[in-house]
Image (cartoon, rainbow, N blue to C red):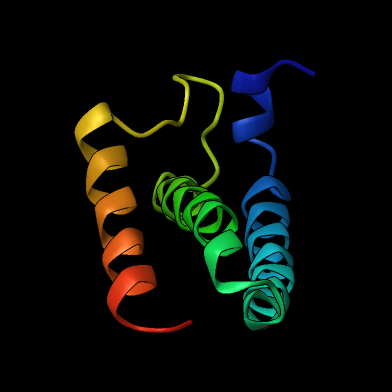
Length: 94
């Protein structure tokens, strides 16, 4: 089944919703593990989690349409997310 046809399948949106919910549960569990890492090692995993969360939100907003165009962040969005994570990492603890 092609991507376009899959988008029209009656179970696709329910699948995407369930999948995104499951991903969020695993992400939240992983986020709770960050304090177990040495402070200087937390930034990279936290940044990757933030990037992935932003992409996941886009997938949810598009009702799981990952076929018509690639789901990605622009350079400006990546810099904004990275800066936010850096500021939290540098001045606040997670």
